[in-house]
Length: 195
Image (cartoon, rainbow, N blue to C red):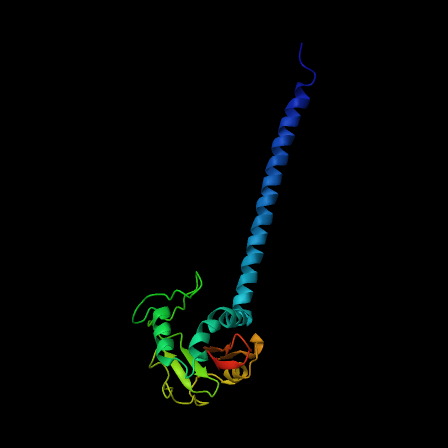
């Protein structure tokens, strides 16, 4: 005698396989949609001004405090500051300083001079420039003139005024981007200079 439920069991097997295939296909489609949406979101972030503001915040919170010991010295430790910049950039010594947090390294390679670091004191006197000959007319020990930078110096002026709002610490003109950060005294918060 034939099993009366054989047809039902066969149908159940086919339905289970069908539901599994539809579920897996739907999950793959949802993952693909989320991946595309995530990629579009990242692309839009990179095209907007959000990325420079995030970088300026990182400069202000992580990098600028590293300059504090050099600017807090009376007079500022210009030689130590230049040595530190050389070390961080892989310049003369090529050794990353011990006080740099893990994973932080300022990529200032000589392959095109894309990154220039200028450190000034509260009187706008240039204490250090990296690379040393990067900006014409910018000399260590001399005041930073308004026209020396290829971008508006408004972010530097804001940093020297102690502003911490990243929207005021970033300027973009054509392909040039200027980010500034105040270097403040840890004890009383007074501005020692700017990066």
